[in-house]
Length: 148
Figure 1 (tube, rainbow, N blue to C red):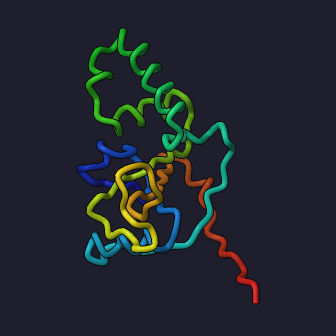
Figure 2: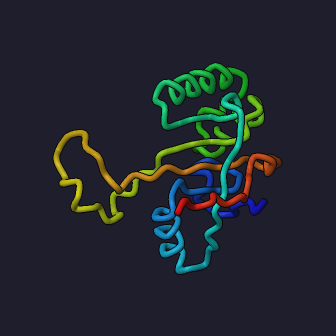
Figure 3: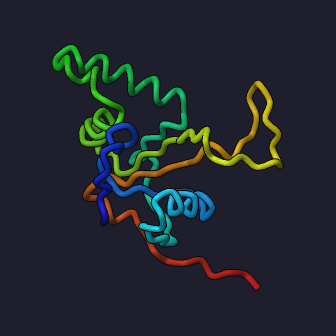
């Protein structure tokens, strides 16, 4: 497992190996990193209880409530950046995989979806997964057999 070692990881999902949910988003990241990344096709196979899904508002709010309760013992926990809080929760709750939605307002939007002032589909948000350290067993590099 290649653990990300980027200064901004504490603003995202913390320690782990990051994955994109489709090839287009993988290419976006590779281009952003000036081609200094390798794109590998794989599947993540896991049990639902091992996923911390921050694309779900209710889950995110429950996790913040948990952090607030636990911070009564450790005041520093409340002030931590998201990645540090996620690392803490992942260890406590035995989480193997974290899912977030990354907002990239500078990302080129598709003309398929016109920009409007209220909720709308967009290609500027991206689903990101982070496999937490020590959980390489959920990464399956089998490739799908394409149908003819």
